[in-house]
Image (cartoon, rainbow, N blue to C red):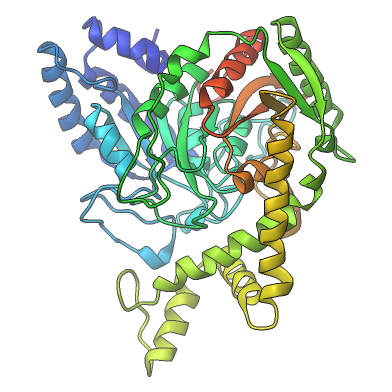
Length: 491
């Protein structure tokens, strides 16, 4: 078995038993990155020298019996998390070679627990996208390919496409990611790996470049459900530097993975049966229902009547918050600057050159819906509908403990297949945005393959701060599915 074939949980045991050194494990991942990253483009920045130095320090701690819960574990970091002394770009030209002098809370906690950082992972620019095709550093390629069309390059999903592709291609044992409307769960499903968006407030947002502050939440992408549980425990916790961080004890998520679902009530929201949904997605959903029923759960039909308004609500709220958050990128305070004849021209030229087309589109949408005369008609109305969407979930929890839905409306699509149609791209988030609007935990678990041999995922949505329940259901789905397929680049 190659070192990169170990799961995170297996690698921890091997490191503790001194069956492999942290340096050997890290070097194996750096070699894999050198071999595959030129094709996949999952990493924007590789920090090989720093990673090996950290691995040597981890080996010393392990030898002294002082290792942390992630001691010597090589991880990739989405390039939205500020990392002290390492370039942080948000995949945008406007940040250029911005090198933060401080560490995000989540990466600081991972370092505290002994993690080794391999580098910074590619993403859609400012996390705005569902394909990882909007990055200023070029698109990320999905390591999977269609059985009957192996030459078509596929998207890994977005915005955390680099994170999902790196984990799937064995270029990291796990990765940090963020989810504003599905940006952990959709790429995890497209790449055949697991990913969880925790409850809003579970993980600190300090030091994470903001997209939409009331929706953004960080979480892990990893090879399986247990690995996600291990990473989420290190990433979670109260942070006084983040006013939205919740002061609540962090459970042992890993302990919940194997506890089973006997006696749990699993809700099946009828509104998620969309017109035109592919038969393969519906069949996998029905299979997931059968798996949970066989595992001892009771299946309950529930209604979330305002689901049909979730996408338009999201695409008002998120761009509005983005237009506000991205106002700071003006060519004056930090980042790239394009000179102008006066201050206004400097702003205009800097932002026109620094932001890509999708970011510009969302800034304009957001500025429009916040403008005088339209605020009440669009933004205020969207916030009212958002409250109704949250109320739907609150009522559903009286009938069930968690929800099971598809993770995506399709398998991964070609890099050139939807890029010219923004609405078609936005529809990729149809099953995921509701959890962000309501602040709920949601997890994608690989559960099967489509007719072309591409991975499909199921989504579990849980009650607020009941990630343990989500992990219990996800563990049951994972065990029943027995998903063991691997992408062609590593098979």
